[in-house]
View 1: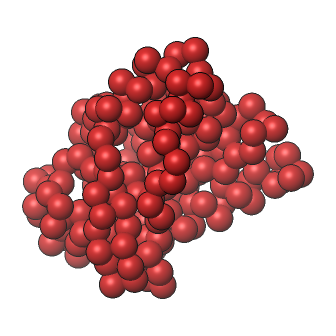
View 2: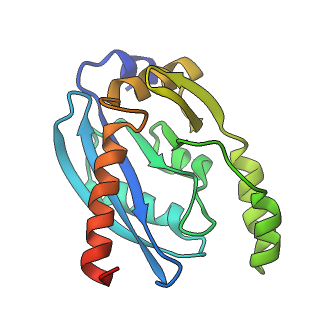
Length: 193
């Protein structure tokens, strides 16, 4: 499917991925929700990522491929630097999944992630390389307020339309809101925190 036709399609599907973690636990819980733009949920998938690791990109690839759903047209992720600096390589996601990919943030970044990475991690050069490749997020104004987005496979205008299609009651698109609720519930059930 051409990405331009993706935007005009009536009931497109995205995989929305969110995570829950605490520094006191070695793994974060990732949940992916397949949702149509008419807000029907027709798939859920779960995985893990290492807190402070570099495996979240592989986890998301595994989630997407494990669904075996050629009708999923795009991937949205709640954040690009998650699970304590486990950085999502959106270029690799886009290349391997062959669908548009976007990482969304709902507040402007605070602090200096580069300095924190150098201070905290022995593999800081690899992390900084990924951070340099993914670039800075761009602000997208929506009817509910600004969202900061890193994206591949769509134009800025298409990103804005796709985000708006999945917003219902606030800045966070529904696939991300629902996947975050599920991952938080699973985290509490598994770890009791």
